[in-house]
Image 1 (cartoon, helix red, strand yellow):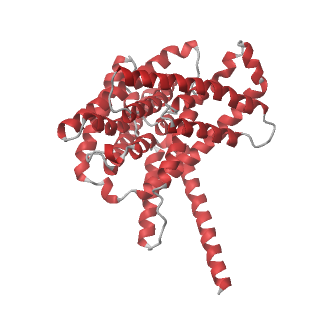
Image 2: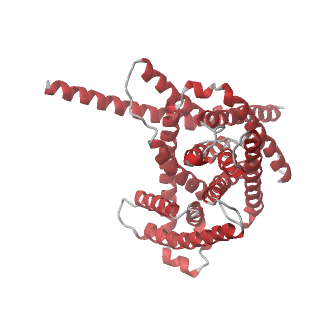
Image 3: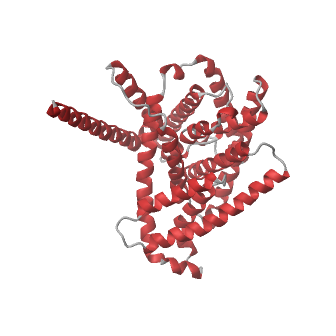
Length: 405
């Protein structure tokens, strides 16, 4: 009997390992082919997770509840995605115009879209404008995890704009959400207190960034990058406990180590051993990208697994999701016109994804409104991703036709 139980456990362990490896390899295939097929990998991951759920139900396999894992993976994914995005941001005078346009574009889009959607929730419901705004902000953040890989085949200018804009959108959206959700009133005191929090976070970020950079250049042990990532996540989480805008640290840390070679003329940089640090930063970037991939894939697979079919085809939320998506792209047209950037193909690159889900999960029960639920979130993510996919396919085909003429 004991041998039979051992064999059963061994078979179950082997099955789980094979399944996990297969799913991650399929996800990797989605990731490397998405730039060519124009199909966002997030849609395929959600579909794969949903398919697994249907299969387990069909053959009556009992699977543990994974819902508690989502906020954990989402938070780690948020830190890593913002870090990965900021590591790719190159700071120099030639990029100043693009950085300014993308920052202002992201800021205007987040503020304008969230205010409009909040007004709709407030006007058609019986909710306070504050709660309406808290529930509206998650729909206003462009997903860098989806946008950046999807923009690989765009022109250099369009690709750079997508990288900068989506990274700024992530950071500004989370900061705006944090400010609105932790303050009951919005007056001189609340803005002043938030400004003080930002200053404190900048000081903490500066000290932490120098300390981590020293560790990165001085640690001789062959295991050094995972501890660095763990320290970054730890600082982020501790800062959140004190309601500090923790993403500022991720932004400044990523910008510093991604661009420190442009600061070599400062004498104190020599303390960080620039020659050694430069090599370590390249290795760190590579590891950060791979860890981010693993966390992002796991998040969307589990989220897809937890999706119910009724949530996707929920006709009650379909009208709301359509209106929200319509205004997302309407405001994007206005934003690109004001930035004097070409509409095609940038107008289509406005997908919602991980941070939308994470902010939705972060809303306190007392602040939730009935209009905003998992169905609405899923539909907005799928619709914006499908519009991006179709738009990029049409745009790319038109470019290819013109090249052959």
